[in-house]
Length: 296
Ligand SMILES: [Zn+2]
Image 1: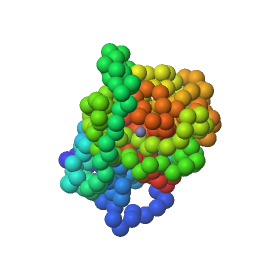
Image 2: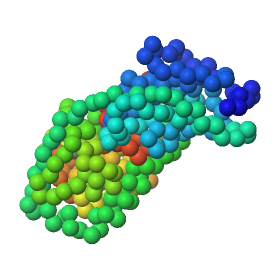
Image 3: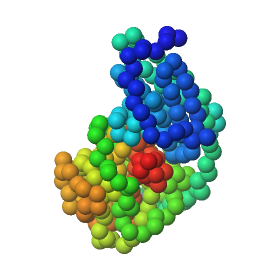
Image 4: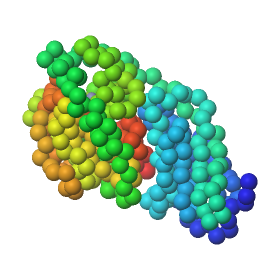
């Protein structure tokens, strides 16, 4: 392995490594991995002491750019709900004038069990699964969920979209009565897992933005119903499904807690509720865990 260039721009980072962090040093470069949220449906927070030209973190095929100077040189690396717990290799890829160099870092994904849930699709909504527009729409939705814009729009911790506690069903493996593979048909992501938090509210309850961002998508889709996608920047995207009404337009910028619309049961929703999903580089992660990491 070639020694790293001495022309590295050294940035001072505030906090010292926590005792449980994985630290690897290569030349002048120090790589620190916070594994405290490294579970399926969670994330790894990777920090560098220096920023080279372009640097990526790669885990299980997902490639994430290091962002700077927001909170030091940091990458938030998502872990899919389908990831296997156990040892894994995080790749740190450095692209400099000297060439491309890949540094492997041994990390671990801890197991996490999510309770299964069974969902009954109402009889009158089952024909929606046969609508031929659904698969094209779900691929279009995934393209939106994979959006990456450089600037972080959030300035404070994410807030719940409605002021009640959600049902703790993020990550739950799901089975459906009245249809198969419903989750993956909605967002074109592999695996039948609940990729969001559900807030059990009646129709017509005001829904507000969890954080500032730009409206990427505000459209009625066959399966996810009245669908709203917000780009918060740096690969963090919110998605709301099954709304009753959307009051914002595509392209608009919204502040944290701005009104977005109201709850409903549009699309293939078994009952009225608000579904809020958070995607990190197109991978669904637990909004609670990501919110904590963003606040650091
Ligand atoms: Zn849901």
